[in-house]
Image (cartoon, rainbow, N blue to C red; front, side, top):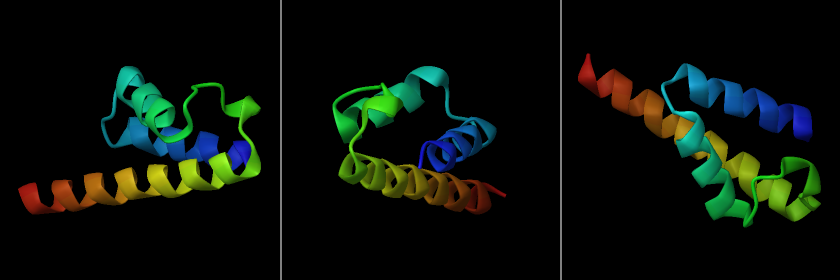
Length: 65
């Protein structure tokens, strides 16, 4: 699960999110920024949230073209 989260975080960087923004997304979703301390439900929630942000960013980029 940690590897999947790391890949999603990398994608967020690639679509233009800053380190601070990504930390805030993680903190708002899980209550912490320490990914290795997440329980399985927090991990699932975080994966879903990160995927939502990536989809949103892609939609925004497509609308701007």
